[in-house]
Image (cartoon, rainbow, N blue to C red; front, side):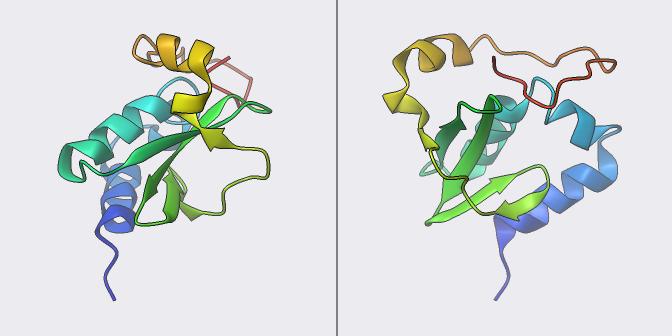
Length: 104
């Protein structure tokens, strides 16, 4: 069975320069927004330990690495009100950023 979200994420990794760096250092919420553009049912989940957003579609979770297991303790971003309020302003971080989290 083809997984269109996984295919889309793989294409991003292949064609967007520094995609993995960008989408793990300031643009994980942006990736959710890109996926939501063709999957309006997509939902963002937030892992506060590393400050990272995963995207849920049909009970499967994704980030720029592809299909992922949701880390224990992650919650729907909508339930994390302070982060949700700021999420719409998250932007790409500088490429030199050394921290793996992007939404702190």
